[in-house]
Length: 204
Image 1 (cartoon, one colour):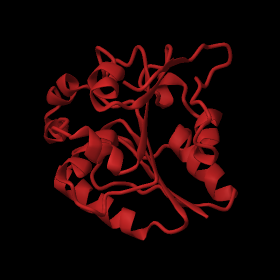
Image 2 (tube, one colour):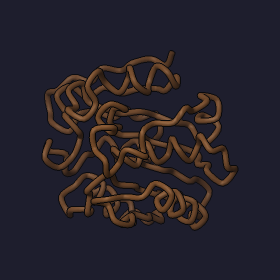
Image 3 (cartoon, rainbow, N blue to C red):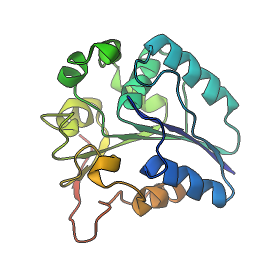
């Protein structure tokens, strides 16, 4: 059995149409153990409180494989946890989706403490095989996630054309290719809409 931990972002109250909610339902229906918690106070989150929740949730994961899927602000949460280097922050696979840029995070007082920390790339990789997925036009990540995170950390990066913040307002309800990746790690993470072309960036 595989255990999945799905973590949401800033101001996300887990709307039923969001791809993370859909993914949690699909994985549960397939018999996997899924944790998709509402993190405390998502409109005004506290980094230390969220870190405490992350440690607790990781400790509850069971099964032969542990997979963590983060969207938006929770990507930065994962970076903070790995930067601190505690041994329990570990998974077999990690998917980081649509992280905001350092500049944008600094513009929101509610999440300014989540600004990306200095992370040693080997330490990040030691916490789990990590993959980055982001759009080429995310308004919350000017300059692109590949430039801010993918290349500096040497992450396998999938760039989704026209996907904005890869959230519900951008049309990302059901997202079959993320489910495919959950079940088979070599599967590409494709755009949700048919006809779009995926740009794959090699690890550097």
